[in-house]
Length: 181
Image 1 (cartoon, rainbow, N blue to C red):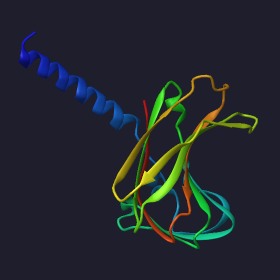
Image 2 (tube, helix red, strand yellow):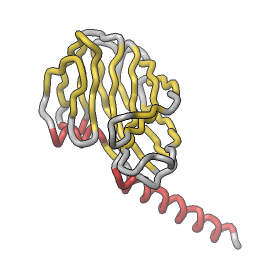
Image 3 (cartoon, helix red, strand yellow):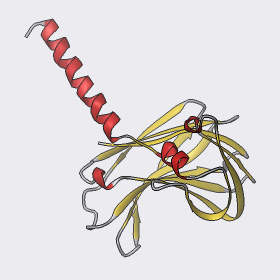
Image 4 (cartoon, helix red, strand yellow):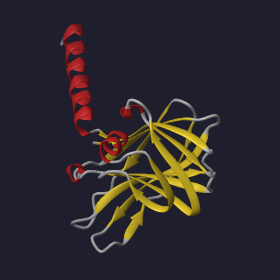
């Protein structure tokens, strides 16, 4: 095989992988933008579309405003809760996936410390959390790889949970996407 043949083979493999990534990528913010309007959030779980949830601790509040255009992200103003979760559901089509890459982009004054983990929720409502990974989100885009277990019960679904520790009062969530492969 010549050097040119090897380069062409490598290019084709990279193009095929890029195509696969593009087809399986779940843009959670786009899903939310298509499903809800700007909102005031109170403690507890709030569905922001079929794939994306936000959860706030007891006594907490947040205002959510989509940037213009709506696909440019979400601005969050909070009352500085102790924590907040951003949760993305993996589609049923990702059942055979063995890994998931999570892309998170937050504009903020200081880095945001977070834990990210996978939760498997059985049909009866019980759930099993995978061990969390620490993630520091500082300005640009942060990417983390999570292993996906293959032993989930039939009918179970999986969520990637980003647990923000002491989120700042003003956050601009530019990107939250999942890529199951």
